[in-house]
Image 1 (cartoon, rainbow, N blue to C red):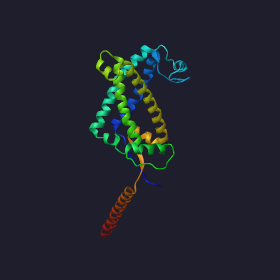
Image 2: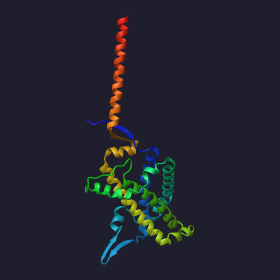
Image 3: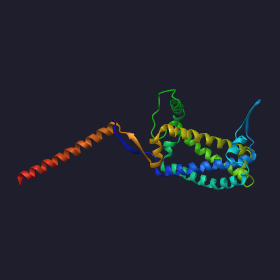
Image 4: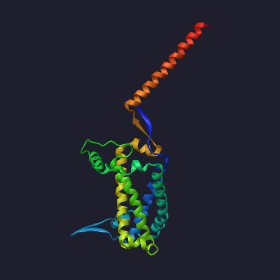
Length: 251
C-alpha cells in the first residue's frame, strides 16, 4: 500500500472566513428574495417565450409573500457582517501573501479550460497545481469582485440620495438594482457548482476545510527519507543492544 501522511492545506483564518461567509451569504440571498418579491420585474422574453425567475408558486412554497419588512431588516443587518468578513478576508490574503496562490496568473485562463474539460470527463489531461487549480483561482477571485460590486450596488439601492455620486457611477438606481440582481444570480450559481464540486472531490477535501489538514500520498523522496530514518533508528537500537551485551560480558 502507498504511504500516506497528513499535510496542512487551509489556514485557520481561511476556514473561519469560509464558514462565516457560508451562512451569511445564504441569509443575504434569502432576505434579498423577500425584498425582491415586492417588485419582481426581471424576466427573460424572446418572442412568445417568457421566463420569470421566481414564479408565484416558488414564493408561496417558501412562504415569501408579504414579508418585505422582515427581508429588509435581515438584509440591512447582515450586509455589514458580509462586508466586514469580506474585508478581513481580503486583508488576510494581502498581508499573509496567500493572494499569490489564489489570484489567477497568465496561464490560468488557458489551464481553466482543461480543468473544465477534465471535470466533464472530456479529456484525461489535467494541469498540475499546488493548492487551487486554474478554474478555482479564477472563480474565487471573481467572487471577491462580485462581493465588492454587490456592496456598492446594494448601497445605491439602500440610500440612493445619500450615495448620489455612486448612484451616478453605476448608471442610476434601476441599473444598480439590475447589477445587484445579476450578481445575486451569480452567487447562487457559484454556490450550486461549489457544492457539487465538493461532493465530487470527496471527504478528504471537505475535511481539509474543517480541520485544515488533508491526507496525501507520500512522494518517492519522502518515502526514501522515511525509510532512511527507520534504518537509522534501527541501527541505533541495534548498537544500544550490542553495547549492553558488551557491558554485561565485562561484568
